[in-house]
Structure formats: C-alpha cells, structure tokens
Length: 307
Image (cartoon, rainbow, N blue to C red):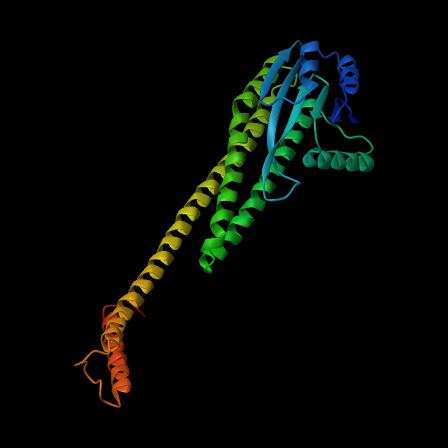
C-alpha cells in the first residue's frame, strides 16, 4: 500500500506492506539504485546504513507493544531512504506513530491549505514521533511496574515474581533495540550532514534526533534497574516469608513432641503405669499437657520467637 504526501519542498512516500511491484515502481520513480531496491524487498534482521549516489538508506528496528497481548515487546522495522527532496519509508506491518503523523499532517494541510515542510524538518518529525511512541510504551510498562510494586507490598509477593520478570524482559528488549540503533543512526546522520544539502540548521536537528534516542535509552535503562531492584526486594520478601513459615512449623513441631511423648508413655498400659487406677487420670494428663504447652508458649514469647 502506497501513501503519498506532497509538501512545498519535499515528498514523503510511505509504503506499508508493499508488494514487489510497488517497490520497483517507486524505486524507478525516485531513481533508487538496484542495491537499495533489493534491500527494500524483504525485512532486514539487523540495522543497516547504505549510501549510494545522492540517497542514503537507514534500516532501524523500534520497540513496540505487541498487539497479540501478554505484555510482550517486539521490534518493528522501518526503512528510511532520504534524498534531497524526498523521504521514502518502508514498513512491513502497521506502525502506529507513522499513521498518527500522517493524520496530523493531513489535518494541518486541510487547515493551512499548504504545509511548508522541508526534507530535514520532515525527517526530524518522523524520528520525534517514533521516539515519542517508544516513550509512551515505556510509560505503559512503568505503570504496570508500579501496580506490581503495590501488589508486592500488599502480601502478593508470590504472584508478582513472574510479573516482575516479564517487565524486566520487556525493558531488556527495549534497551537492546535502542542500543542497536546508536551506531547506524550516527552514521546515517553523518552521511546526510556530509552531503550538505540541508544547510547549517541540519546540524542542530541531528543533535536533537540523537538526544531523543539517548533520553529514551536512559529512561529505559533507569526503569530496568528499578525492576531489577524490585525483583531483589521481592525475593527478599519471599525468603522472609518462608523463614517465618519454617520458624512457625519448627515451633509447632517442638511443642507437639513433648505432648506426643506424654501420650505415648501413659498409653502403654503396663503394670506400674502412673495414674492407671485413678478415675481422674485423663483430666490430670490433659491438665499437665495444657500446663506444659502454656509454659512453652510463654518461653517462646519471652524469646520473641512468636508474636
């Protein structure tokens, strides 16, 4: 599917899940070489920068929330080809921030009749919207982490351990994707700067684009560290809970053993067994057991082992 947006000084062509014929037609229209055309025909697993004549190709993967649910972060590939007066974006699935930017520019075009955009301005807008989308996805995961933290300290530490691991995995995937972008993005912006087609103001735009990536990468790194600390805290709470359970079981076992011994002795029914002929033997033995239990409970309480 081809989306074409023409402005005063730049044309933005966006290909969504394009066919081979659509890619070849656009490549012929924009005079894109065969090597770059081949790169567009199928997804590229790794980030890539290729400079050819007056155009430059950049392949990046942006982390996004999976539409399949389950709280999974996946990577969406976007291919950029930038010329002096055009930008071509190719994507192999629906990318929400690009749709949002298209609607925004269409609205401005309807109101202002003609939007004055240049290639460098449009390029900055594309990256700002893409990194804003990553920022929004990060905030969504952070909100989940806050709910998990509240549940953890409300006594649900057994249930939250898996949720914390899932959030940590999401942050890890996002951090890897953003780190993989650093070197290709720098080479891409440097190649555009060397062409000197957009003037001195482009230097400031390149710095803003780099800053967008750096800020979101630092945000993801910070929250991943927080998730790691929460995981350690959750493990500590679980261990403390288990220690309390083991202590309680040990105290119960220690309390029951003397009672079982008393019951065993008086249950042997042998000659000479104390209180064997006493009609109140049962109540006497029960009273001794209760007294012994009371003394043990008092002893445990004074040692602060219980209560």
